Image 1 (cartoon, rainbow, N blue to C red):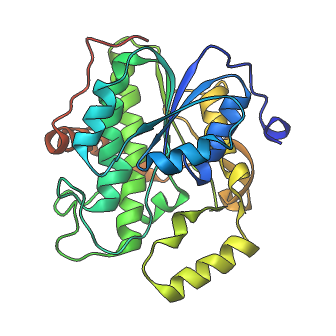
Image 2: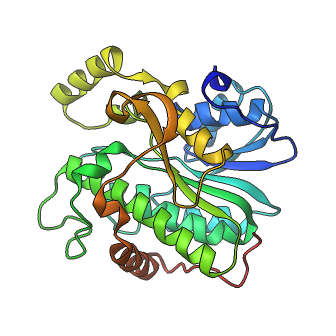
Length: 296
C-alpha cells in the first residue's frame, strides 16, 4: 500500500529509532521501515506493549524503554545507545489530556510532545547520520505563538490550546534544529510531518466522555487509517526534501490523501521564536546542542 503513494528505496543495513512505536502511527511507521530492510528500534514507555507490537512486525526489530515524560528515562535511553542512527523519528505524543504534569514538572503535552523529544534528539545527535523526523499536527495552526510567559499553562489550562502549542513547538524545533545543523556543517536533515486526520488511540485520552464519543464517530466517518496517516512520516524520512520541510496529506485541506510537501502557519516560520524556544528548552531540560560531536 505504501508504495502506491511513496516510492521507498531499499533501507537494508540502516537503523531507525521510532518513539511511541507500540501503536498507531508509530507502529505503522515501524512496519513500513522494517519491511524495507531497516533495523527498527521501538522506543516505548511500556516494554510489554512494545514487545506485543514488535511481534506483529515483519523484519528486524528491537524494543527499548523510553518515557518522554521523564528526563531521567530519556537520558538513560541515550546513554545506553551505541552505533549509528540513520533515522530518528520523533513520533510519540499525547493529545488533549486533562491537566497534568510530567515527572519534571512540565505541562504534560508540552513536556512529552516537545521537551522530551528535544532532549532525546540532542542527546542522540552524535549518533545520527541521516534525518530527524518530528511528527507534528495540522492543529499547530490553532496556536498564534508560544506563550513564553506561561509555557506550562499555570494561569489557566485548556487541553486543545496546550496541544496546539506543543505541535507548534515541534515545527519551531524542526526549523531551529535545521539552522543549527547547517551552521555546524552537518549533512543531517531536520524535517517534519503531520498525518492529517488519522484514526489512532491518540484521541482517546481526553477524559471527556462526550468529546470521546464525538471523536470516535469522526474517526470512523472522516479519518483515514493509521497506515495511511503514517505515509507523510515515511515521505519526510525517505524522499528528496529540503531541510525544515513539512510533509502532510495533500487532499481535503491537508486532512486526507497521499503525502506531499505541506504548508504551515506563519507562526511556524518564526525564526526568532524558534531560537527563543530553543534557549528556553535548553534551560528546562539541561540538554544542549552537541555541535562538536556531529556525525553528518
